[in-house]
Length: 496
Length: 66
Image 1 (cartoon, rainbow over the protein chains, first blue to last red):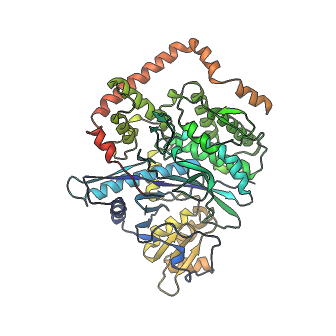
Image 2 (cartoon, rainbow over the protein chains, first blue to last red):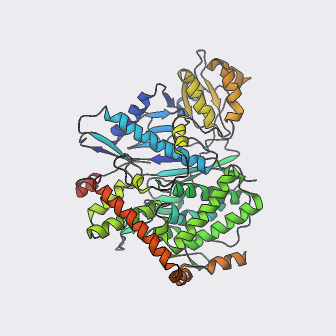
Image 3 (cartoon, chains in turn green, yellow):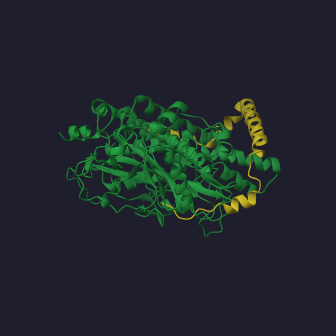
């Protein structure tokens, strides 16, 4: 049986300091996050497991974990919505709390944007006159530097990794036809190919099919094996090829399609013929470089398909799967139904008139804007005004953001997004983490994905492990939390 | 399975182009509406665009990450 597709997203935001000649991006990121966190009264740090090996109240230890990749002196906060907000090298990064369905995740991804916008406002008061920290939700600076928007999916450990590689690679190569955020020009290429506009921000940066790297020789399939959950039962499928989206429809499809195709794998659903690509790395670039969508990619069988045709096959499989098994893995029935409906709709649109999707997909919305501007001013593609327009599409400042002016279709209500700024999803362990922070922050020493560490005034520190992502939900712990007057009582009752 | 694949195969963009003449009035209307929308938007964004595009683009450099 496929398992509920618990999912999350980690977005590294682009950061630029206006008139801040001396401020490094790392300092600016720290200042930004500190400014936001200082406005909240509670402040709890992230727990790096190697810092407190002897403190585990329950003898929990993890196997096969990789060392933390984050420099520990940098800002690192856990928020009451269960998210993690921190400095990753030279960028502010926001990791959503674990969500139990793709639509909930899109809501929390947008809440992350709101938090970044509020951070910019909070930082303004700490900067010299004329200085400003500006945040961009994109993945490339147009000069060969890329930063990621990573997705995470909970997968049954029983699925052999090579099957994930085999079946997910064709999807990750072609889903950019709807999930791409659009980019002006070409990066990271030694070829003489000329590309005015491409589907994806990230495609130019992928050089391997499978591997562990995230910054050099990036692989289409990342093999990081760090489930942040019971490693005997679960795998965390870590996807690094995606673009950060401003469009909710694009983001929802990106996550939803990937989640449902993972469920097919878990159920060993008969998927029909082999869609393995002959050269995935060449294919991901070729698909991205052709907004006309006519480029074909070669399968190992020798057959050639366009990315849209390949997506039709994947869609058909997903629909058959839904008919046979239902889509409870995506949460409430309406979520799975919406996914199939929108997936089919965008593929039809891409096939007949891609520009009809300008209100739904980032790459189309941005292209239409640029084409309109080009027409009006008679500009060539190399004109820096077009690159400026493309960059400003991702600017998160409400007064400057171009994407916000395009009236992209929304799938989540603004009030739900606002709630997600402070409240955790009720349906995953993020609920326990977030609610503990709201209720007992002074007693919480640290928290991370799979535990919360309490200092209840007596030795030793007490670690509450959360190895099951679907435990610690409102249903499980609300009564318990409401009945506890102190963190000591909570820890006591959890320990019994 | 083969049927469904056949069906998908049989509906590539080219066929749709053929029937487009019938839908032309609607498409044009829709196209004009889109154009009017983008025109309004372009009027509006002229006011918010960064002043010096070349410098703005040149200064946006992101090093490090992930």
